[in-house]
Image 1 (cartoon, chains in turn blue, brown):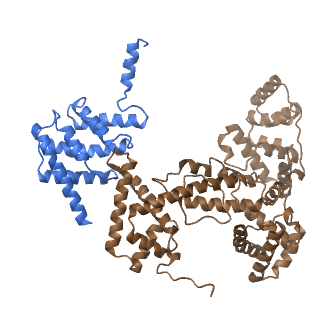
Image 2 (cartoon, chains in turn brown, cyan):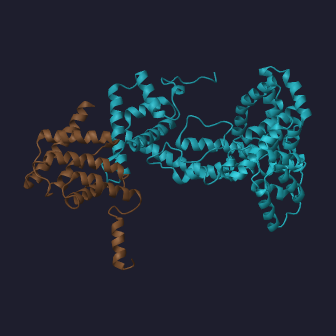
Image 3 (cartoon, chains in turn blue, cyan):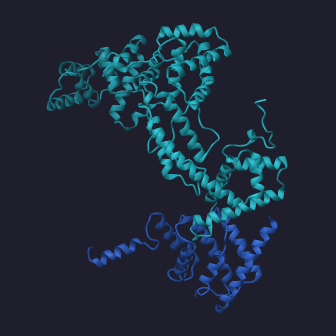
Length: 158
Length: 452
């Protein structure tokens, strides 16, 4: 089992390091040690939120989606990735698995670059929280009561 | 020589019916038939299969899954593999299969097997519904309905929850199904229920109804097994030389049975029950071997009940004397004509303003001429307990019984959705009845039962 685990880990590290080819153009790169730490972070988050992962590849997807963000530089790249991985798995549970990996990562990126302006606290505590609540109550992810009021205003009914 | 049996390395009795795959792996490892590397190989194959199933579960959209969901899928995989291994002639064949076969292939064969069994169970369910007996027992009717076992055929998930039993099954069988899960449980349950129904079909619906009513008036709400009651009564009839089809055992028959059975030891009692069962088979023309076996399997349980009853002198609780509810005496209580609403309102106002209890009682005696008015007044006039007692004292047993019938205080469950005034009335009535002499209490309750 240990040989198997180490093989899997090596494969995962290689995949993460391959992302450097893509992120290099944005001035971002991860070291071998960074990659191992990211994998450890993923393992910890999975354990903390009671999930298991068979395939992998979520870290690569997050890296590739977020690397062109104007709010990420080489100074905060690794910490931001750590936070994003933890937030991702937390909201997989909170959204009751109703959202696919790609959709969730896309939503996180749009909110991070848009309304949150690079704030991970706002992303996790406000935007994703609101989105998860919407999904649980059967609304669209970006549903907002304010929008409804605005629409009604436009109709001139109120 | 007929009993020669092939010796197996693995003892079949040590294997669990519900967790067959796990238990066979454990046994195989203990017996040394599979080494650690073989087990590890099986383990890895199971994990790969779990990964594949999880991906399909997520429809390829999510790489991770909740631990509980993964555990459930794994249980389903183990169950499916176990079901196939169980279908092999013996556990030794299962070991060969585990050594040579691929887990994913074994799983696929198991899945097909479950699918076929599901189809079989569906037709079994239809058969059971066709030979369903007419009874008032709710648990029986609900279990057989579309929202009972019927739910299973809508909700059973062969792919991810094959080990689960998504059905509402409350009816207790004479031989409960133990140590089985998923489709196997449903099949066995339906098989047993079919046999029980087939036996009960030999008797008139009315006779079964009277028998169960004799067992308990509230039998529609009880979690009882109808087959066991009917079989016991039939055995009793056979032993007492009565008509088996009638299921009618009188008090004298029970006394006769008591005297007869008391002389038997355990072995003779069992022999006599077997003989009585043979009589039943002849009388009812039962030829179905499975049904015969099922009935014979029930005899030890009934013999034990009889033995205990003989010791406690309660044979009338085992052999039930049927009761026809239509023949029970009934009392129709008619209240007088109610007073006019306006007049009633004036009376209540007067009573509410009246200061002295004696005056209140005098007013009630003078003006209230109907039982319905008195009943309304007890709720509306805000009387205290002493006044209640004084009023109750003026009533006869039938009136008190009618009051109990209309305001039952025995069940706390029903008392949840009633008004405060009604609760007060029930409480005072209960306190009053409790203080009455025992013979009067008995008389009142008897009348209350007979009231329509």
